[in-house]
Length: 275
Length: 261
Image (cartoon, rainbow over all chains, first blue to last red):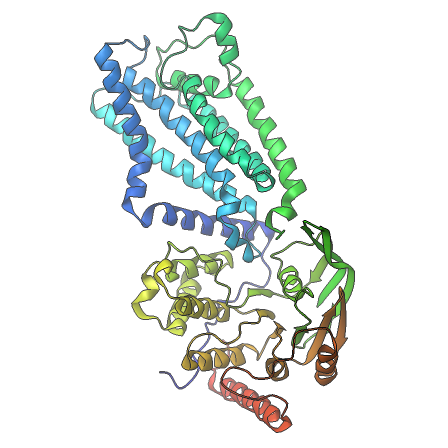
């Protein structure tokens, strides 16, 4: 045992004055690493699962389709059709639901005054995007190895649709996060709502066979637009769904972001205050 | 400088809203360590959290230009699935310590906590004492102007308690503390002034003894004079001895330390 006290670390002092931007950058980066570690490093299964979930869905549904010899849609391969629907949908679901939980699950962290709820949202979104990109890469590489043309035909449109999807998920997650602090049951209801949303977003089956008057209703769901736009981005010969466009989901994303930011601004003190 | 401006904090209860502070204006004296005292429920811990910026007032503000620590020895910020090393790295990063200074801090906390290879195992496997050792070491690894301490000064076995005190004495060379305690001996040993919270008001006593007398007179819990292990209590000689020991420790530390580059 040391007889003398341990020498204190010298430069570990917090730098005297950091700009808000520097602090936020440091906090989001630190949270990103922490989230990633908590999700993955603890168990390799965690990483495996993020990649395996879309792959598992894909293979089950593929088997079904092959069994019934169902032609999905001209102009796009069935497997690519599914992959381009499933991965973005899971990304959207994970961003919004995991962000909705972020305050509750990170409450201990707000004891460090630098950490604000918004930082946990940003870092969780970054983690989800990173993991999703990994899953996408693995799935597409596998499909490419099978001889399917997976190279995006219109990469910029694909990127635009993906950005809107991420913004939409973030906006929904932000709104839910604030709303669930006061009313925790909203979280359960939204979790349940994701099951019908999964079926109604054109993730698994094409919507072009749906009668026009029903399609108008389905098109109220911004995910239908985004999923279809992403498929157009991948396959050049993919016939677009009539009525699908970027403007409508962008409106949703901006609306939810604005709503979420307003709620956050109003409730920002109460989110981390003890009640 | 730490100043409270029109500070209001309330909690919603089933019997309506309970105000801890209502439009509290107060200025803490500069350059001294402060003992924050008051009966249970007087709002000591709440005020400490408000000063630390980890709880928000209903209205009003805490104004400060000092660097204020998180509550010393706090372990609620630890992620249990991660190891102590990873948790320490996280705290380093949010405080802007990266690269060499991050490694230095991690090494310090590791040496301070002295829990061997447990340091790299998930914190969910730790005992309460091990967690406390890491938490205390982490608090000591960073330099602040004010350290916030809520009660728990002494954790762990006697050896660790001694080490904690030494580290603390080192830190107190350039810093001060705001100590919430019912323990008269701790207040006497560490603090230069007493702030007594009572019925939503704060009163400053520059003279510790006057503050303690007022605290004893208030409707607080019975006074506790015995600290675990050692009895300093009301004996002025023992008090003087404790103070001298603390200062001697500081002096040796100053002599030993090479001049800053």
